[in-house]
Image (cartoon, rainbow, N blue to C red; front, top):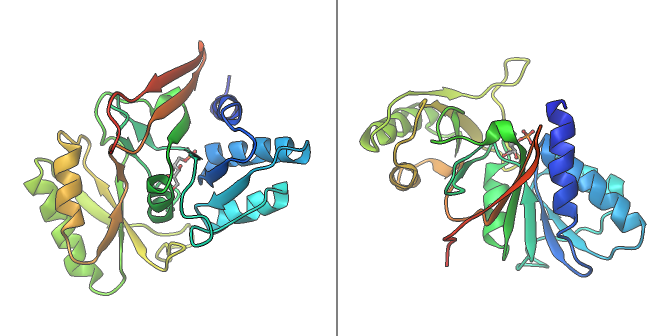
Length: 236
Ligand SMILES: O=C(CO)[C@H](O)[C@H](O)COP(=O)(O)O
């Protein structure tokens, strides 16, 4: 089965977790897009839910699918967020932000009682870091911020280059929040919590793509079927 079919299978399993009246966080990316489309089918069949999108792209998809939308200002506490991931480790720590929506994704996840990650099994890794870690930064002072981000990685026991993300046309990629993304290629992150702490302390860093203690459940679709992993310890 091709990766996109696997993503759709994982998304379909997550739709089964949705109950009438739920306030949902709607993730971003190709896997979350399947979830939004499948949820839309249920909504058109009469399911009453409300969604908070994690990006303008997801807002557009959800609107087109007929899902009633809200904001975190109107709906500050959510029941369930379903989102994709770039990597997921056995403790359900994850790297997100490949689509550049990590800031809103993390805010929405933190406002949710439960975060479920949906992915094809290629996202499952023993140790995070093969996927370059997205770090969202303000445009002002991006050169010294880049140096400080690389230094933070060294201090956390890993090293690598932070590269400004660009669009296919070669322009700097700008997030929905008007920020830039540095992709920090580390290969391996031996201590994600230490790196998260170091990065959060860098002036100019708005957020990073390490999701630690946020994911409660991972739904992983592979050639052998669906596997569900549940976190032993989640925040709070
Ligand atoms: O974090 C994300 C967007 O910021 C995505 O969830 C992540 O990049 C996975 O994307 P995909 O489902 O397309 O593989």
